[in-house]
Image (tube, rainbow, N blue to C red; front, side, top):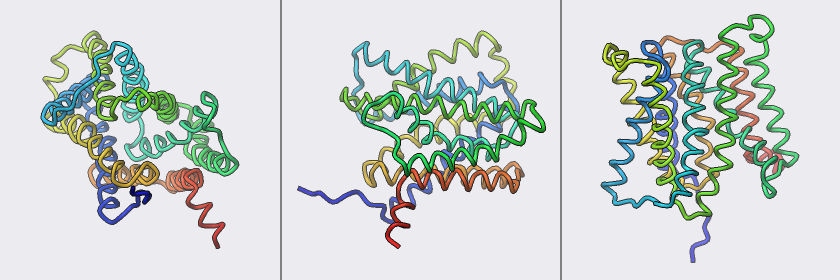
Length: 305
């Protein structure tokens, strides 16, 4: 029996960096898409393309899906809280703020997940070290959001709050999603189920508010961005995520949370000429430190000195 704990070797580290680029690119792709087409049209296209791509992968790999209605009701909850709501909030936010800033604020997801788990579960309570990490993370949010709320409480400030609300929604979904393991539902099945159900929720809304011609008249770069969102940053990224998870373990793969804002900021600067202000850099640093403190590595390292 092999009891060796998963470790982050060089191959896993490189795969993790690549995954951060895929998820960081989602903010870039979304920024390009919502600059030319309505938010719900872009959102519907992302989940439809993602569902079709991931579904094709599951067919090729002969991956069986659960058939119980009870499980698909769980998928629907996840589709709403892990896809429809946060995607809509993040997509709208990027009509007002940069892709990099959206990714930085979205890095609060693990912090809100911990808070939700503390309130709603019995076995995942906030320890002293984790509370310190949460406090540092919220200091980062205060740096990023606080001044704009006080000095210029307009759409940009609301966009920042929308990113935070998206992280809260992800937090509820993360805690709820842990039920799938107890139900014997594979991670890929859960991912496909939630993307399909979110498509069933989002597509009628997009169709009701916007004619099909809205997408037909979009420039070619929007189509490329939507394909990137659906195939690269959704279907392929999730498959890669679970492969890294199996190889390196949950603790190591969680480091991608720290890398995505950096990737999104770099891609935004290279492609969209976005700039990272000193305040945004400080906010990102504080959130990253908070996540590291929550993770326990930095505290453990300090205590061994």
